[in-house]
Image (cartoon, rainbow, N blue to C red; front, side):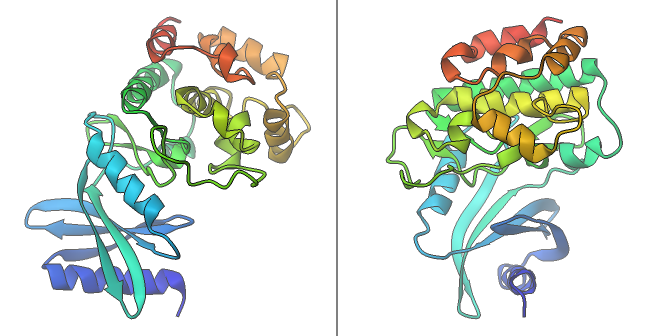
Length: 280
């Protein structure tokens, strides 16, 4: 039986034991699967991850969510260990976000700049909240930006969150740190842990925003591949001039600064980033 089927069966078994209604799969990631469940009249996302080795990262994800209280961060309802058929699992129950992901929305076309600006400001305010908590998300990408039924954006999946006031869990000898390469900052791609802070999330979010405006990765050049774009970021190249000019023309020239190769050249404080996003 495959791991995906194991987790589906485990989710159904858990729901039966806890008196929840099981309504099937919502999605699968590299390390966890999500299912829709219902308790009385409340629907929620039931996320299961297989525990291999130390559960420390999973515990940190839970602690980070418990410490956050921002309307644009997914609400944690409950988290606990669960054993199924010899599998050691970590279970997280989060609010159900009914209106899907930014990733799915982009398949239907790019959002108008005016709509994107509202999303951008809200998510930048999330970064300010995380910075106050000494947290760095490190995996901001379209699949991890979801929407409530009223259209409000929400940042989800704190699975590789970095707690700046806690010892790092990433080995120093690794060539690349945690993150999704296409949406990662130079310091993530080179595992330069000393440079990781809120400006890392600033860079990651700005890749997402620029992609929503350009229709492609902001470091992608004509005739090149996404791999080439990732290498450009990793080797700390400047954004191609044509992409920067297009962002400027669309009223988002602020992203040029937010996507500077070195953190010291980006916006220093979240408040500055927020204000820059508000101004066309």
